[in-house]
Image (tube, rainbow, N blue to C red; front, side, top):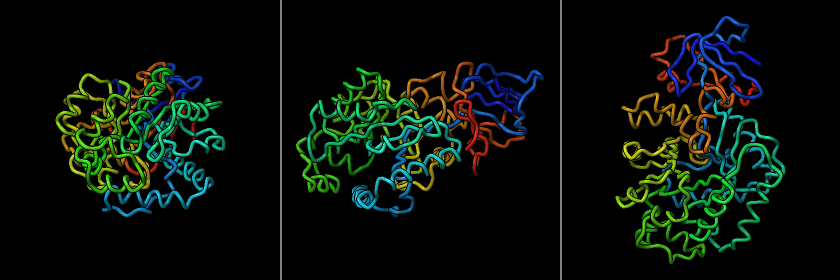
Length: 394
């Protein structure tokens, strides 16, 4: 049993508590509350809170920071990304993933939902230093795949790996066929795995599906993609029957009125990447409407191919600048309890509560409860004290 004492506890799902303590045993929070004078490790003038949860990341591309200049079209960005990928070896990607993990920990992230583009790397990866969900990325943009191929690839990806969790990620409607989405959905529903996909990310994607034209349409056509599914429907409408009710939908920037009707009554989580959104110079993200409609909003960083840092504090600040009326308490929920809910771990991750995982961070703080949430969202610099599963260290 380890007892931690802090100037302030910020449990997320309960009000902040001054002079608080958390008791940790076997990687779990056994109890918490006001310090009772018992022997404790005194963390000093800090706010002790749950570690942050990055709901969407591509660690494979951490080596690409600054390699693609902003202000390129989405299809140009894809071309450049593909060119860069062809220059990298498996060793480069392994180094990239390791560097990404270090950056996440240094910025207070203790859980990440990572899209893995190269599942063959898994056999060479050491145990991750933070709680990691690996989403097996699937595409059939050039060649359609058979059901047994999808199943074989998924089970090869998962076999013998116990650390973290696993899910499937049909990449996007423009790179993954309807049949592939349906296969992924069936697999996730049968085995209780999460599904994540990129959806409605850009105007080019919308133009491709709704009107069968535009730069992305012409680029994918040149690759030999079957374009018979374009024209008439939005990307959201095109993908809808391939999505389980618990699907995590990343980006969701470009929607039409009919899409909102399709989203109602479904238990989707919406993952927004504010700094990536700024990188591409996209129009306003419809956050207010998503919140009004009752959707579960989470934040991610995407990759360093379209971001400057893997830093959820920076993502909160970026979102706050675009939506200045957003309460800091809600922002913190977007990177703690909401992604925990998205992955099916509400009450067990992303909060300080009895029975939750002992994934904690401490930030310098000398104020009181009333100002804690705002101070958290304004935090800059490294996070020097991190605990994952009861173990400390970066």
